[in-house]
Image (spheres, rainbow, N blue to C red):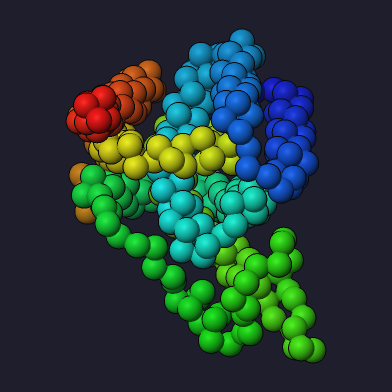
Length: 332
């Protein structure tokens, strides 16, 4: 399945593990609100690392693997940015102190990585044994694209049933106590809201995995590339949260760009399913060779253009929206 040498994969996983531990549990555990300079430095470092990794992959495994990685990384990174909207709402709803938000994100991102790893293993098993699962993945991505394009403006974060049930069966205090999950008051042990926040983000990450894993399998079937794309997308997400926290509402057209990408990958998955068709009620159980094959370079082009155009359009809109306010400030 993969042309990547085993030694390179092992070294890559070790280096990524070190990156992840340092980013989340050394830098991330220091309770502070990172400055803009600190955020930019971290984001530039991890973006440069992803670009360099793709270049090395090009030399070692060939251009196909490199383009698949770049396509997967850009898709997962874009979906991660969209997920930050939900993180912002969760942090706001649970009134997480600003200096504790890095710690919360560290745990949330770790949960996301573990869940995505499980979903990747399950996905590889499914697509290896049952090619028809691409029909399901493709249809789900088309449905998700429609939901993303429709938008969720004005919607508040709603606690899922698990978190709501938790509040009924456990003693939960009203105040945080640093990073502690439990606190004793009057001889009675209470769980702090931190536990609820962790569970809210963790269970929300499950839904994120349902979106992201089918999307990445629409671009590559190589589990090594699938996993590294996800890891590089999650690295630096803490800093991106703080950098974009005040700007997320300005990325008005990002959902449209994401919906185009998800719909495109959904169609690509369905076409691949038709090429490897074994379902008896479609073309007599034989592959449908008449449908076109979408090359990976075209996938990369669609992703770059869609996300890039939506970001630029959002910035232009934000600037135009600010013009009246700036003009009023000058008159005043």
